[in-house]
Image (spheres, rainbow, N blue to C red):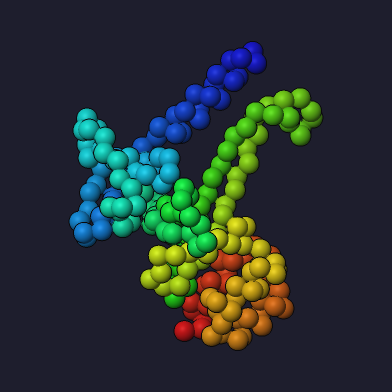
Length: 197
């Protein structure tokens, strides 16, 4: 029974990894390619123009923007960005665009399933550890700053306020007074874009 359960879970995750959605890739020359595809390792994009077509791989050297059209009608936009202070492997990431404005917010969402100790009633089982890492940039910048979990109460975040929100004293006062939720980075960026420029 346990082996059957493991097989079913494994097949579920394999199907998730191979699932393809309708996508649109905008290239740096301004042209667009439409088809079926998905994000694969290292921020690369696998695309087939039609179901029976040959697979094509695109990366940050040629891609300006990726749009994924999910089955539920939600549209997700992604851009390749350079991570500030990084070098070599992992210095360029394909990030989901969350908020666009004078300050733009991005996220990198990963969800990993691991087989290990089950905290609910003991024993072993599959556990899911979702993780969202936020990145922030000024409008038009290819370089983003990693905010990790975007704890707006942290000393690191308060230091960054000068760089990204330094021209809005009212917002800086609100951040220092903890007027926003601890992980309310989206509200902070929206406030800045709507009220400070």
